[in-house]
Length: 299
Image (cartoon, rainbow, N blue to C red):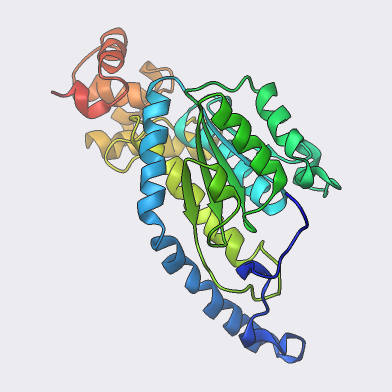
């Protein structure tokens, strides 16, 4: 990677609106920070064509049995791990389907691991340990757009034929040159100079929300706008599951509860049982034939 040069990185510049940050009142600081945060959605919007291309490819790879693998360091890595973890209860997928890698491993979620993000070989090793395949998609996340850990991972992924994408908060990023698909957003200098957990982190979170949610829609994890593959792992989610059945099928709470039990707490199965007047076995066959899409069982 050569000498680290941060001079041209937007994320490292000083914000002219906060040069006197340490002299502002709490109210003034909050208002300016909120103004800065308002710039993030528009920055993300400008990258939607690239984000859309990545999602289309992820859907294709999911349909071939591939995985989605996020990798990053520091805040970027933590956001990837968070998004991956939340796919399990929200969409009922196995933890192996969407994976978050962070430089330095699990301990780096709470404590900085010295030197981990600067190790390109570590990025390669982490993907090798996952037995990366050509049907997988690797998304490298780096606010600066130059993290060696991410570059190493992307290079290895490309070498074995996996799909690669990058998310950076600087334009013309280094990681973008190592990926098949490059997503870059310019949110302007941070409220606190160089603190990329702020606007950059928010932008990354918004992009990851799009990638995981819309990819899951694309493989049948959603009916209308209902999360029909939710895993009811606690009382709140059990009640949400019943409400989803009620909304999807326009039935009473009692009917929804009955079919929720008959379907062994599988929301999607309960919905198909009701909408197609099928028993559990028949509904399961219809769903399998439809590739998991409820609407295809109704044709």
